[in-house]
Amino acid sequence: MVSTASSLKLNVKDLSIRYGSTLALEGASFAVRENEIFGIIGPANSGKTSFIRAINRMDEMTPGMEVRGDIEFNGKSVTDWRNLYALRSRIGVVFPLPVGLPMSIYENVAFAAKLRGVKGKADLDEVVERCLTRAALWDEVKDRLDSLGSLLSGGQQQRLTIARALSQDPELLLLDEFSIAVDPVTTMRIEEVLKELKQEMTIVLVTNLTQQAQRLADRTAFFLEGKVIEVGDTADLFKGKTKDPRTTHYIEGRFG
Amino acid sequence: MSSPQSDRLDDRIDAAWIWDRIARAVIFVGGISAIIFVVAIFAFVAKEGLTFIFQKLDLGFFFTSMEWRPAQEPEPEFGGLALIAGTASVTGLAMLIAVPFSLGVAIYIGEFATGKVRETLKILVELLAAIPSVVWGFIGLTILNPLIIDLFNVPVGLTVLNAGIILGLMAAPIMTTIAEDALKAVPDSYREAAEAMGATRWQVIRQVVLPSASKGLVAAILLGVGRGFGETMAVLMASGHAINIPTSPFDSARALTATIAAELGDTARGSDHYKALFSLGILLFLVTFVINLLADVLVRKGASDRS
Image 1 (spheres, chains in turn cyan, green):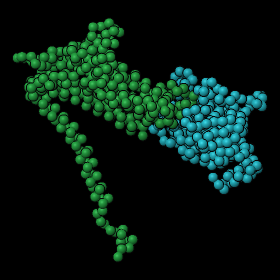
Image 2: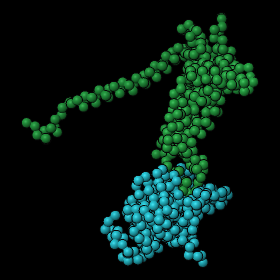
Image 3: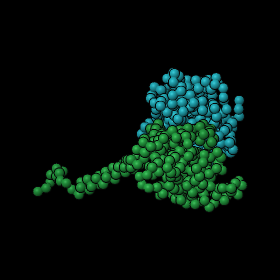
């Protein structure tokens, strides 16, 4: 078994994020453990997405986004990675709105593998089928893998995006409100997949559905107005064992 | 007596209504006259040239002979091959220079430059597009000409090379602007999604941005070709204006446009020579029309594919 220090997938230390003069996240400190599903709940503008973007250093392509403090990934600060692209390739991201890249369904899912240098047709075929199956999309698209990914419906595109993230074989999967554009039945299917994926990777799940966090997350953080109000075992939080009454209020739907 | 209720039913023609009518009429006249002018120009060129083309011009001879002797007595010769070759070679060389140059600048401005650098570059590129063609011709004549003679040790510097470079530099700014617009139309979410997967900037540009902007980029190139075809003054000044089928960049050449500009003043109105020049005009018109139409179709297709 690994030591305690390295069984932390992410260690967030006094993280602050600002856009110009607007503070999006302030003094966040918490840890995400290896192979857990870590839920993040909170109303809009509470800093959830900003946190996700800071993990794989997306701030570097966002004008005006400024990150202070530190996020350790596998015990090493993300800012210490010299090869940013290698860091990003180990972290899969699913954005709230699906982005089907302007290429075929097959190419969308084979993209990351090709970036890694996988060339053989058989190997790529295997990646594409495995990832699409896991994202609960294979049956719907297996006969038209050559059609444009951007022509799929919103829900299908989101599953394509998830398949693409899985094709990176990520150690860490970041899901930012993935179910916004997906119907409830598909959401349930993806949730089942996520429970299985936990064996292989760590998952950070940002969600505006508190019930989704309750169903999936081992531990949950509550973000509010740029502050991490508290982090605790999901079961405890939803049983009302909270340190801060605002967490209970939010979970019970009294605001937000 | 007027209550608010009766005000609402007051169907009176007021100032706003009148101004609306006037504005509509002015805009209609403006729009329709643009179309009328284009049609009228075409009709004029066609009237002067078409009867000549069908009655006197031997089209087979025109497209296969380089004997352009329109003023020869008693039998003038109208062989256009050298002029076509001149225009084609100068435009071809210009595109060889302008395409990589303008795409490179567009990619730099669109994908890498930020803030002040980007704004400054865009303004500079637009300024370059505003330089009059006679100034470019002057540069070809006085700067490039001696430079080519010295560098390559050739007797004449007014050549296909000279005109090609000048024309390439002239076409590059407009091509850059349109290519950059095409790159800017690629949604940022594509770039983000690809970068989040660990693609390098170059991989993102090469595998995501360029393919999805390809139609706009082709349109930019076609508009550059159209610009090259139609350019007159700079080519006249820089190409040497010699009837010749160029076999190397160091040969002089003569373009269709330059021929019209140089000879039209010497012809009697209504003469065969005069009408022959108008036939050249029709040829140019048709070629540029097809190129612009192609570019337009591609731009529209690109726009509808993205939506």
